[in-house]
Amino acid sequence: MSATPDGSTRDSRAPLDPRLLRLSPAARRYLGVTVGAGLLTTVSVVVVAFAVASILSELVTGSTDSVRITHLLLLVGGFAVQIATTYASQRYAQRAAASVIGEVRNDVLGVLTDPARTEARRLVAVRGRATTVLLRGLDDLGPYLSGYVPSLILATTLTPIVIAVIAAVDLVSAGLIVLTIPLIPIFGILIGLMTRDRTQAKLNATARQQSMLLDLIAGIPTLRAVHRAQGAAKQVEELGTSWRRSTMSTLRVAFLSGAWLELMATLSVALVAVSIGLRLVYGEMSLFAGVLALVLAPEAFRPLRQVGAAFHDSADGVAATNDAFALVADAPAGTNGNGDGSAATTAPVVLSGAEITFAGVGVRARDGWAPRALDVVCVPGTITVLTGPNGSGKSTALAALMGLVRLDAGVIVVDGHELSSAQRTACQPQMAWLPQHPAIVPGTVADNLELYGSLDPIALAVAARATGWDRVAHEVGGGADVGATMLGEGGVGLSAGQRQRLALTRTLARDVPVLVLDEPTAHLDVKARERVVAEVAARAQAGATVIVAAHRADWLDSADLVVDLGAAVSR
Image (cartoon, rainbow, N blue to C red; front, side, top):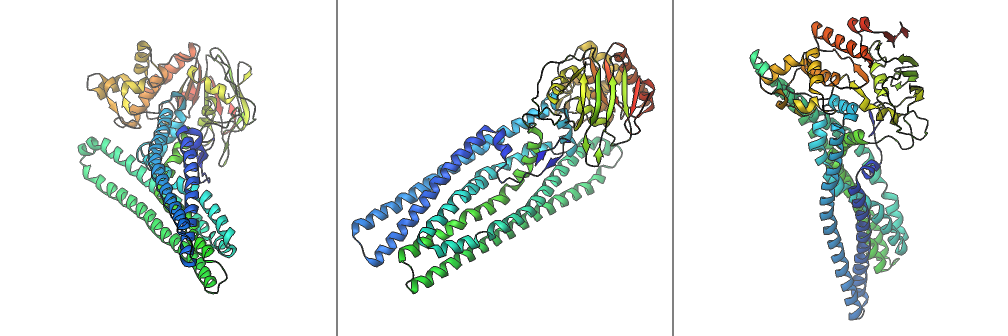
């Protein structure tokens, strides 16, 4: 699966995902070594088959001892090369798999801790799968690299070469293999589609189980206080049952498909063997040709059987890695984010004192456009509020300004200069953005407050008083240093309102010329909303450009410009 502009994913149909090669240097080295090992293994298999056929035919027809000894040495040498190549490639595969997993994991961690990738972190938090992807999911990538990829390479090298060698001595056997061998990949594809769906369901069940268990653990004190601690037992039991069913469904498909692939391969080899036996009896082919074709026939099907078996072992890792790729995959080269294919530039743009203009901005959504033909000029020193019903494109418009969403229509202009996606992304340090689902990373409260850089203590104190975080910090820290208080993934340890106050505090404490706020007072009480609105208004009066996505009356009343994305009405 690969990332789409709206943050969703689409399936990747390639057996060997090209994104893995693009994002991991170790994967590229591993692929080169594996291709070389596959070719060497192919040659050794053909040499062994040739030596066996020669020795057997010579024992029947009679030959000199020196010739038999030569073929015997060739047989031993072929076996030795095959064993050594298999041993060395498997050892290297294990080490390379660990290196590739480490590189992909580092890339994902880089995204989750990069201040410029807040939207990516939000998507992971919404899916509730960050822990699953980073830990167990990527660890399951090992069987994919050490088992599936080598088998896939053997299937593309060994099988065609073996068929060609058989055709050189017996066209009938080669024809039978060519006719029967497509049955294995055809059924393999059908089984693979079933496996992919069940594996995705298993990964979803695992992620749900982890997320809910973390929430339950975080809420144990509250549940005990209201005497509902035992009420969560049924939820835990239901989660376990769902995970067990999804796992058993995946295993059932794996066992049945493995048996079916083995049956198809066995019947195909038996058909070739019967044909060779009948023609040997009637003297229609030489013993050497018959033995060579008979020895090589199973080798033509072996890589395909291995691919089918390794596919199931690696399915969990592939499913988790798809989520990782959706996070770290870069935008297509040579585009500017607006879809026009022009070269992207990152020339510095100064936002201080500059007007920000949305000119005909539109982004395609699943059910249409959201927003569509958005025209608004955001003037420094004013508050611009984007309002409208859910799905009208308020959050998408803000994400487009941050360079996180590609525009399908229109442009964003700053001080008369049209900004590419790369330029908008480069402007992020000059903007303080509060997304609808703020990122709270595992770590201390201090780490989360300074997630986007160090803050001035005075500005932090002013923002904390405005948002009410100063009182929350006293409660959370128990009167001690709250900065050292540890938080779990997604802000486990804080309530929704406390998480909102923390995110608002670090946003308002940043000394930047542009504030971009998405539903900033969600989960706050009336008095807290009034203080936040007043603080934001003070920032606007000081010259900041403030753009807010909201629908509450307090924001609409304090706005200098209201843009209704649903009715396209402004005042």
